[in-house]
Length: 51
Image (cartoon, rainbow, N blue to C red; front, side, top):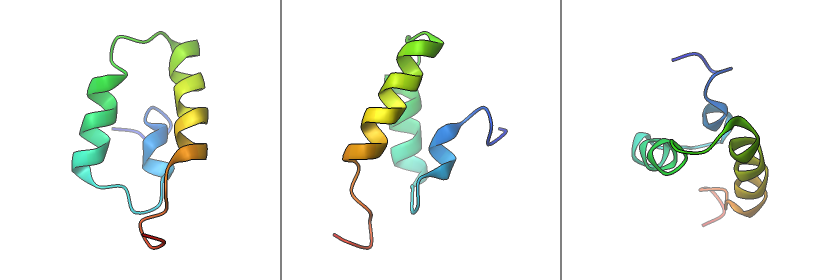
């Protein structure tokens, strides 16, 4: 899978489990909804090193 097709690859420390969960959860969204979700999720997501 290309990083440009999967913006979740840009998240530091993302696990395969988290990525699969996000892909499954956003599968039904259109492109605009996915962009909005990505923007909100990236601002709310905690850095694994901070936890």
